[in-house]
Length: 232
Image (cartoon, rainbow, N blue to C red):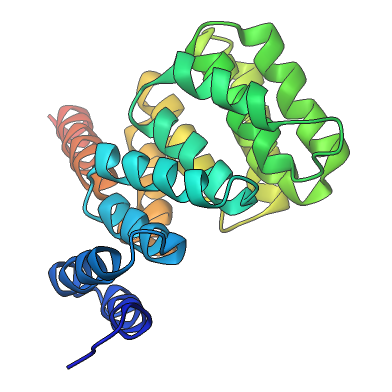
C-alpha cells in the first residue's frame, strides 16, 4: 500500500477519475494527514466533494488550497463558482472583486462576477460584466450570451432572452446551460414540447446534470397533458 503522500494523492486522483469517490476521499484524507501542506490533494478532494454535491466541503478545500497556493487561478475560479452554487452570492461577489485585477484575461472570472451580480439583482452591472467577458476573452461568448439571456429571463424580457439563448447555442452547440435556460423559458411560455427537446439536449451533452431529469419529467408530463387535451 502507498506509504507517502504523493502515492496516496496519485491513487486518490485515479479513483476520482474512475468515479470511486469514497475510495478517492479515503486516499486523499490520508495524503493530507501525512502532509497537511499538500495543496494538490485539497484540489482533487474539493472536486470530489463537488461531484458528490457537498458544496461546503468543496468550498472549505478550495479555501485551504488557496491558503497554501494563493495565486492558483484555477482554484480561485472554482471557489467563486462553488460559492455561487451554494447561493453565497454576496460572498462570491466580494471574492471575485478581490481576485479580479486589470490584468485578468480569463473571461470566466468576469462571467462569475456577473452571475453573482445577477443573482443579487444588479442586472445592469451583470450584463455589463458579461459583455466585458466577451470583449476580453472571445472564448466565453457562448457562456456570456447564455447568462445575458438568463438575466433577461429573470426580468421577464422573454423575447430578449430567447435571442440571447439562440446566439449562445449558435456559438457553441455543446453549451448545456444555454439549452437549460432556453428550456426554462419555453416552460414559462407553455411550449412544453420545445422545452422537452431542450432538456433532452442538456442531458445528451451532460448526463450528470441531475436537476434536468426532474425538469424534463415535468415538461414531458405537461406536453402529454396538452396533447391529450387537444385530442379530447
